[in-house]
Each structure stands twice: as structure tokens, then as C-alpha cells.
Image (tube, protein in one colour):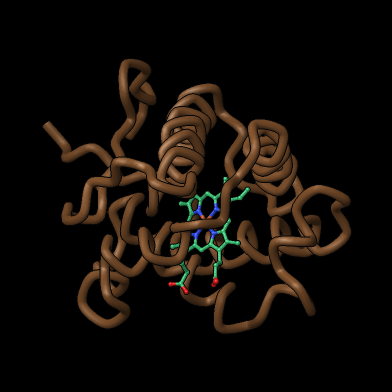
Length: 154
Ligand code: HEM
């Protein structure tokens, strides 16, 4: 049997994830709840780093782990932000809209896996961002898969 495609390859690789992240942060910069978390706008460096994170999580190159500091760096960036429930929900909503802006595949299976990671990741980020939160200090960068609904033609 053929190996199942990674979410990274299915999405369209590095270029597709770059389009997603840029479309997302363009929306963030114009957003009343989220722009305040990025005073002065969302830098190119931030966009690049978050792109590397998503590429790795979806099964692409492990650059965030190998070159940028891995899970520990990501967690350190969220600490103390005190993300509210409203901000978390807005973040997840704008990512969903950005997936359409960026023309990511819109098949039910890919979008199901995408939203599952988004829901999981935003809830963890919100938790880790609370003052005094009980944070998991060390972990690998997650690798996300398809979940229950597999594409019929990998
Ligand atoms: C799936 C969910 C999420 C993922 C995968 C994610 C990923 C990341 C990563 C990888 C970084 C570090 C970038 C670097 O290495 O420079 C980061 C930073 C940041 N994240 Fe998230 N994040 C998520 C959810 C959230 C949410 C829900 C918020 C707020 C509503 C948020 C706000 C921020 C902010 C403000 C920073 C930058 C902090 C700084 O540079 O000082 N994130 N995120």
C-alpha cells in the first residue's frame, strides 16, 4: 500500500503554508482583538518562524526543532500573554478564513485535520499563556496526522 501523504504535502508544501500564515497575519493586523498582541505589526521574522512551525507539525522539514529552538521556544513566546477566550476563538476563526484566502485544499478530510490541530493548539496556547499556568516544560514539536477521516486517494 502507498504511504499516506503528509498533511504538509497534501496542503501544497512550504509555499502553501507560507500563503496561509501570511493571509492569517494580514487579517490579525487588521483585527480589533488580536492586533494588540502584535504592537507595530507582525514582523517578517515572526511570520517565517510560525511558517516553519506549521510545516514541521504537518509533516514537513523539522526546521523549527533543528534551527529555531523547538517546543521550548514556542512555549516561551506564549507565556504571560494571558490570551482570553475571545482572542482564542478569533485566532481560530481567522485561521479558518485564511485557509480559504490561501486556497488550501478544501476537501473535508484535510479541513477536518486542519481544524482539529487548530482547536487543540489554540486551547493549549491559551492555557500556557495564563499567569501562573501549569505548563509542560519540555516536549517534542507535535506531528499531526489525518485523524479519523482519511482521503480516499492518498
Ligand atoms: C495552533 C495554535 C498556535 C500555534 C501553532 C502558535 C504558534 C506560535 C509560534 C511557533 C510562536 C513563536 C514564533 C517564533 O518562534 O518566533 C508563537 C508566538 C506567538 N503567538 Fe502563537 N500559536 C498558536 C496560538 C496562539 C494564540 C491563540 C494566540 C493569541 C490569541 C497566539 C499569540 C502569539 C503571540 C502574540 C506570539 C508572539 C509573542 C512574541 O514574539 O513575543 N498564539 N505562536
